[in-house]
Amino acid sequence: MNAFISLAINLGIPLLIIVVALITGSTLERRHYRSIGEREYKYGKIPLLNGKKYPKLRPVSEARFVSGSVVISYDYFKRFLAGLRMIFGGEVKSYVSLLDRGRREAILRMKEKSPDADLIVNLRIETSSISKGNKKRRLGAVEIFAYGTALWYSAAGE
Amino acid sequence: MLTTNIEEIPGKKIVEHYGLVAGSTVRAKHVGRDLMAGLKNLVGGELKGYTELLEDARREAKDRMIAQAKELGANAVVNVRFNTSSIAQGASELYIYGTAVKVD
Image 1 (cartoon, each protein chain N blue to C red):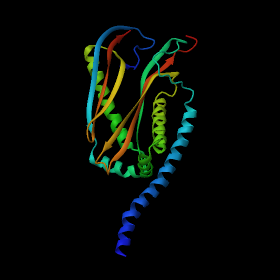
Image 2 (image 1 turned 45 degrees about the vertical axis):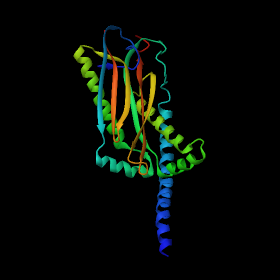
Image 3 (image 1 turned 30 degrees about the horizontal axis):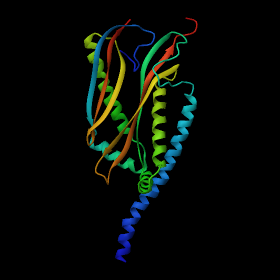
Image 4 (image 1 turned 45 degrees about the horizontal axis):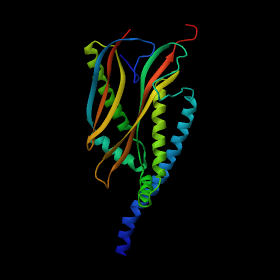
């Protein structure tokens, strides 16, 4: 009986955490993707260029540095899936979607700072991992930072 | 102060170069924020405290770079680059650098 209780505690609590993480994590992810989709549609008309050259359609009236950043963390379920992946190798899909969300969010936040820009040139995206604590209780998070130069062309009549 | 991460300020002409200017800051997270982040880490998602912390740190590094450029008599910084490196557990350095110029 005692062995059964200790087994239930040792196995049950991590399992419970994983299940809670699965439910909340996937709900949050779905909600985040929906909001990303809506905002990408809204700001879709601002072209992004990752080169330094830009089309000289008209004289440029204003240029400004813009940036956006987000720190996003793994949930327990994703980490559990990744842990399984580490045994067999291959693509870690649970992390791919996380980083995809982070990058798109950072780019959107950058666009939100210049919603009326004509285009954004020299876009750069930087990713850095923030980790703290020992291996077992590690805080797993990544920071994604997107930056570029927003340009405004002068009005056609000028 | 105008800043861009391309080699010029579009629409303006660079009349003088002043060389490299840089700013940096090393930041650590405080315990309360860490605790909250640890809890948030269970369910995943954005860690807003850290996003704000890093934004603040970056702004400070940028302000330091701009102060240096102003001292030289520049009115713009071109070719701005960012660098983040974690130097110790729980602390990271933010470094920003660019070329100070004067534009018309």
